[in-house]
Image (cartoon, one colour):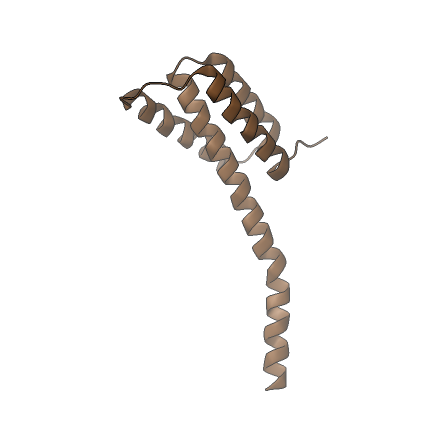
Amino acid sequence: MKHRFLLGACLIALSAPVLAQDAAAEAALNAIRDLGTLNGQALACAETDVASRAKKLMLAHAPKTQAYGDAYQNATQQAYMNQTQAKDGCADAKSLSATLDALAQRLNATLPVAR
């Protein structure tokens, strides 16, 4: 009985770093998805400065993998489509820029730029 407890405790201890890595990876992907969403809104609203900044953040922060590229691209396309079909219009450039500033801080925390 004692051996089973020790084995269970060891398995839990070994899986804790994996779970933490999974949570960190998911937080990073969510930040990239949010960046793609903002990019799609900015593109649909012809806010090219905001869209350009979003793309630069993506290139600077996201690992160059298909998972991150797909997350960004899919979120951009979905947001663009949603924005063009929305009846309530576009957010102004100042609001989009403020949202992008907050996303930049999230990206610095979840996916710091490699130096």
